[in-house]
Image (cartoon, rainbow, N blue to C red):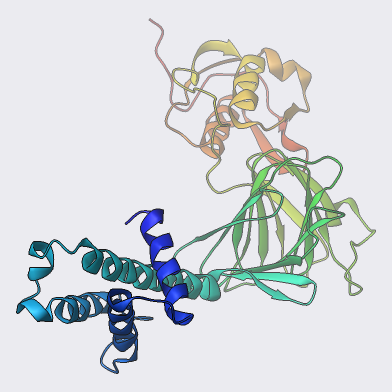
Length: 350
């Protein structure tokens, strides 16, 4: 039914309550009220119950002609129109009940000046914040933020695991407090997860740049060594282990190419200098790669790095050059090595 039907029913209801209904309107409204009072019908909770109301209305309004389908043959459009509108209201009422129930279970709950969103389902829950940032909460996780979020600050308190896609706003940084660490971003995609067995908390960056800091007993970032406050970029992670005095930076478990970068045939190298290989890897993964021995940049590399993750690609190149790599908050650092015979997955010369 359209909005005109709903409006017509509401007007009829208003006339009935003022005692100005005619006989036909009164009969339809009384039938509706009787259906609502029927103890066998719970229109507020069961989606199939509105059909029982419909049958009662049809039986009542068509009783003078012996069977329900007499409504259609009587030519009295009025008797059909208003009961149908009544059913529409019942259906809308049920839909509203279902929506309200869902919002109550998984929607925001306001307490004082704070808003709480909790995922009580068994699937990831997508939450859109007032600044249009998106938080995907894992089952059992929750976030809390101030009711005036995005006006002065954008601070979120996280309990559990979540993935964040943050709307850029250089004037109001986005801050996430999770246990003993604080993550500060300007606009990026990252996840924060806590290991259920060891208690370690990890911040993994998908794109952009974030700052991760350890929190002291006063709840403020520790003003100590560089390892207690780190900046990480795409495909890097910072790990906090309870009881440890530092944040450990490393590659995420499965580094992924930067969005929009095509890697087809990019990782096939035939006697190409290491400098070119590094440029391709940096562009593909958004990670900075530094070299201790600058002469190493001229060393030729012949290898097929296709279909390998970044860690394996680096292992192949390091083996070819007898070098090794480490990961810090600035990215990847290559040390040692020199030009020599290529090992690993060699591509024969054509």
